[in-house]
Image 1: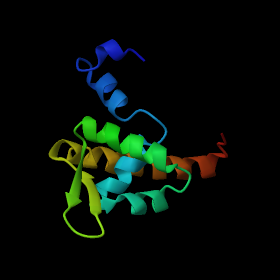
Image 2: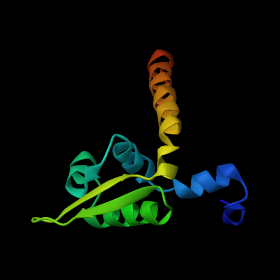
Image 3: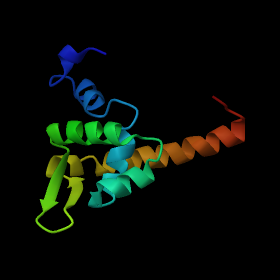
Image 4: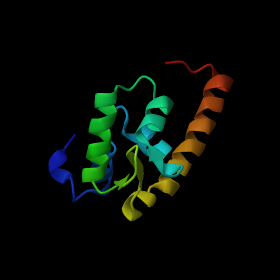
Length: 113
C-alpha cells in the first residue's frame, strides 16, 4: 500500500484508517451506539484484550471514535463514534448490503474461498 498517498488519495486514506483484521468489525459494533469495552469483547470473542485495546486506541487517535470515562464506581468507559466517525455509517450500511448480496451470490453460484 502506498502510505505516502495518505491524506492525498481518498481511497488510500480510508484504507489506512480501516486497515487491519479488526478495524471494520470494531467500527461496525461501535456504529450501533455507545458500547463498553467488555461488550465489544463479547461481540468479538476471537479478539484478545490487548488487540482490542490497541485497535480502540488507533481508532481514537484517528478521530473516528471517542472514549468517554464516567466518574462513578465501578469505573465505566464507553466508546462511541465521533462526528467524523459517524460519516462512515452510510459506508458500513453499503458494505452490509453488498455483503448480503454477495453471500446470496455465493450460494447461488457455488462460489467458495
